[in-house]
Structures are given as structure tokens and as C-alpha cells.
Image (cartoon, rainbow, N blue to C red):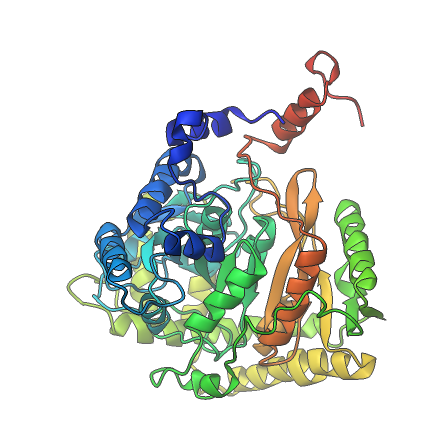
Length: 540
């Protein structure tokens, strides 16, 4: 297959195109398991991994804008990891493996945590979020921080996914003119492009699963309360969580097992240790056999090409022994989104004010949401060249978390999405999980009309209920990845990972990106490679 010019240039600069360069270790598309096995076998070192990933980043990230900062301590950490390995010291499951962190999660290194905003460009507090501390304890090398939709996509109703004042516009590695979705845009594009073994994202509603699906990744939004949110720039204590974004289910399961656990500073995680389990132990290729699964027909059928891929996925599930049960309606769907908006706006003001109060006043002069709004107005050329901050202004006008209207909306939203929504559908259909296309393929990046998805989005109720949502690569639509969602009740991560793993093993759908400038260019290159007539595309 003929490569794009960008792909050829990347191979040349990285030394991947000549036999002599075969001696150098190539981490592209290698899983955490493969990297660990090669580290153990002495085929590579952590220092080499950091170096090679940095080389990939130097070539490709000027086109993708997936990263905001590289960790200057990464090589030193890698050297220490290699020394521990050579000395025969006990090592964690991620020993020497480079991992990227979304830049709204604090790390105790010189890289600030900006949430993509110039207002936080100096926000270095010398502290690890507990989930980062768990990664370090497992041996991971924090390679750097990924770009994101600014403030995790909560500043404006007219925002452009993947854009931030600090990092610019993240692009999709499957077509550079296509959206990476958000808000974990950089985590998705970076993991897909093999800038590290995997990445960590955060989600309030769709921000792990959407960019994962669009980048051909496995993404897991855990049950709210399984992973600590301490020292993570917040939106909503009701819906926020961090989650893994990886190239296969096993890596996602491994990462979840590392970052999950109780944090005394985050009351929502009080039961996390009781629910945490060995997520790798449940991964069996026959996990679909005899399992009843609900097909959320109301969340499908929005795009003909995506529907074709979904039908193939359903056939694959049936072939693996799954029993599929159609579900045609989600109750209270229309009111649910309005209730969510009330919850998010109220909690955004309260939670962001609480977070900003913990930052260094010498480094962060914006101490409240009101201060951030004023900062944006004063720095409009940097912060608001493409869209404004209407959601920030709505949040600033809310009455606080003691407001009866907020409390009523919060209770109703959880009930409609959880007990009377997902739980009721599971019980009525007698199924253990729900499935649907995660959403359609990536849309064009359009600064004028902003985000224009073809539709879909299976994960809203799971996000509002705080329930787990797993997306696994399902196939391609015109060269663009689409994902299959697995949704279950609270604390059902192990079951969802098992089902997703069995589907992945039966239908390995992930394809590495080739970084074409557009889907049209990718289609033309493929047709020419197949012997197309005089370089002209056939009409369709």
C-alpha cells in the first residue's frame, strides 16, 4: 500500500525505512505487554523507548498538535528504571513504560497543568494527582502532557473540539482535516500515533469514549468513584472521572487496575478498593458465549455507513455465542440533557473555585471562575479567537450547590439515567450489558460551523448516571475509525472489559493511522495503489 508523504517522511526521519536501521527498536503500535516483554528480554531499554517516542513526536506532532509539553525528567526516570531492572530489583507492571497524561491532571514535575488555558500556563504545584502517583508506583515513565479541548470542553457551547489556547488545534491522525473529538483530544491522537504506550484521559460526558472511538482506540470511562479526581482540574464532582486510552483492551485493563483505588481526599472513591479487581484475569476470548446483551437500537441508525459496520459487529457477536436483545427506547431521554446541564453548570462554578483555591497564588492569579472569565476577556486574542465563554458565564450565574433547583435536578438526572434508565433496561431485557455504536466517524474541523458530528453518542446516560462505558474499535468508515460501546451498571468494569476483549479478539478492527491530509487523499492513495486509472477516482 502506498504511504502518504507525511508517513514516508516520518519513516525516513525515524530511521524506519532502511535495513540498517532495523537494529533500532521501533515502539510503533506495540502494546504495553509487548514493551514489557522486550524490556525483560533486553531487546530495548526504557531510555531507548523514551528516545524513540520523542523522535516520533518530533516528526509527527507538528502536524497533530497532540502534546502540550514533554516531561524534562523523563529520561532521568527511564535511566533509574533501567538501573533497577539491571540490579534485579522488584518492578511494577508498567516498569519503564512511557505514558502520556492529559493536561488537566497534575504531575509533580516541571510541566504545568494548564487545562489548555493561558490562565493556567504557570500552574505547576509540585504535586502528583493520586492516579499519577499510582502510575509512578507501577513503574511508568510520565512522558508528557497531552493537548485537550480547553477547560475540558466546558467553556463554550460553540467550542471547537481539540482546540486550546495553549496547545492549538489537535488533529486526527486518520485524516488531518478531521476532528479528534474531545475533550481528551490529544490523548486520543497521541496514543493512536504511538507517541507513548498509552494515555490517560478524563471524561465528564464523552471525553474519553468519543476521542478513543474516533482514533481507533479502546477507551474506558470507569464508574465515577473508582479513580480519584484529586488534583484534576474539575467540571463536575458528580460526573468527572479519569480513564485509560489504549490500543487494545488488555492495556486498558492493565492501566485501570493501576489507577483505580480509594483516595481519602476524594469521598466518591470510598468504595473503590472494595470494587477494584484483577481486570486482566477476566479477559477470556470466549467471554461472549451464552451472554445476553441489549442492542440499543435508539442509539443506532443515525448514519448509513456506520450502521453497516455496526451490523457486521452484531453478526460477529452472534457468531461468538452472544444472545442479542433489541431495546428500542430510552425513557426520559429528552428531559435528561436539561437536567444534566443544570448539574454541570452549578458544579462547575463550585468545583473549579475549590480547585483554584488549592493552586499556588504566585503561579495562578485567577483564583475563581469569575477571575478566569475576566482573564479571558482581557486576553481575548489568545483565548477567544474562535469561540466565546457562554457556558462559563452561565455557570458563574448559578446559585450554588445548596440551590434547591440544582439538588432536584441532580437527583432526577441520576434516577432517570441510572435506576430508571440503564438499570431498568438491563432488568427488563434480562441482559448484562448494552451496546451501540459509540458515535459516527470524525467530522471536518470547521472553525466557522464548529463541531458537526453525523450523530449518535451512546454514552450520555452512562456519563450522567456515573456508570462505566467501554468503547472498542468496530471498523472503518472511509478510512475513519468507529467504535462499539459496551455499557453496564455501576462497578461492572470487569464484565465490560471481558466482553470487549472477546469482541476484539474475534474481530480485530484497529488499523494504524497513516496521517493523510484528508480522507479524499487517503482514498485516492489507496485506489492508486490498487491500480486506479490515471490517478482519477471512480465516481460513486
